[in-house]
Length: 607
Image (tube, rainbow, N blue to C red; front, side):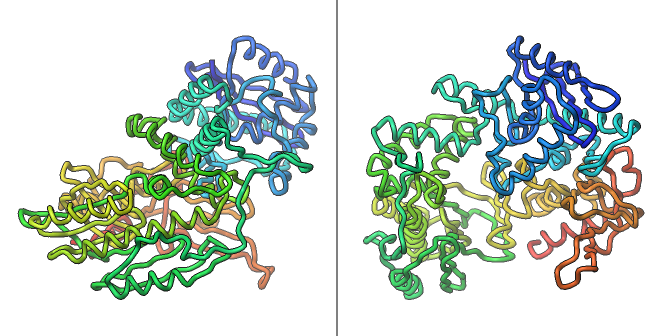
């Protein structure tokens, strides 16, 4: 049995709402001057424990459960005590975010934290429950009804309870989007006898990697007067020449210039340390610590009887370079390479799209990323740069070799692959060059043929494979991950219809069947607010561009130079919008002109 739940804490009111994940059974509890459900909450949790239940929340390990744990320990608590606990958790996040964590062995009841499972505690993936409500297309997106720290009146408590119940329902809904990930973690925990329940995919992968290393006798930690510390290889500087394999060479003078320049560089930081550019055959190639990039702009390519479009990628680039070249963090030794190879083989054994395959993919790449993390057991910046720079030089060698072939045009090149336009009669020569390169580098290439590519730039393009599958990048993406902003998907979806199927823009937009695809989301922090016209609306706001309505404006705190001047920043400046956090408010007509203009930005240069 699993129960989705959420807590709200105010100075004089604590509420807990919960909902059975499989049945329409709900619970609501209140501790306030007008009602004291302290004992009822304790008895309810005891009843859940007796039935072997798990509690499902969103950031519950970091917030909701530590507050609830305080109540369970005391048996009875005032709203003030629970509010003070909540504030101590929030304030500790700036200095020590682990200070208030209740570890699994100390919890009264098992917790499943969707926030952690989806790695939303990573800054780059940070996502709120409100943003998920938008992405899940819920009928209502509700923001906190009263400012934090408010003293509530008796009439406000039912409003808070309704909001609390709404969040519990949203958590339940997201739970059902996460069942595969949860059950995978349950099975993995049983298999290894270790609690993986609230681990992200990357954390699971790194933990599995570490376990395999330790099984092989590799010491991943040092123990001393300061306790346990990760074994690491720290370096005062890195000579880039030590990151480039000896077999790298170039005939093209521009590529050779990059090669020679790199060999002269010594860096002390791996983050954005350098970038060097070269113009070859009218295409600008950029090499740097961020990767290799080159692309034509505003071009459309179509395959026909004479011409083909071929995309060539290195299979599992980062792990494959480490395995193929025998690279490893110095303190972990050669066993690291053997473990890398074993996990890569395991991943191949799982079906693409499965939770196991996804976890191992992120793990294999995550270990490479962790080699640049100063808190990780994998830390060795020389290993990081060997893969980053060495890999780019290898791919650039393949670029040069293919450019020498008659009729071959490089459409794009990036860190792990190349896309070509070429006459079909040179296909055998391309394959021969790829085979030769594979033997030289100990890497494996995989390829796919495209029937069409529409490229705005290196980060934004559509590619249609010969079997009809569409690869989308940047502004053309509409199959969003949960942490991404799924606003105005109609723009990317119609752009695809225009570029791939030749549909007319205006007619397609006006007749688009899913009105939710027109919705956008705006969010401002609690220090700011949103104005619809001159009416303040909630900080996470759903809206669409309408021929009626009012302007939407962010009102941001003053900057130091103008301490009395609150900044006003227009959202969709020049257009009016209809705010509809409750879908029943979506009564105003859609302004199709806005969406048409945005689609034209993605298509007019390409049709």
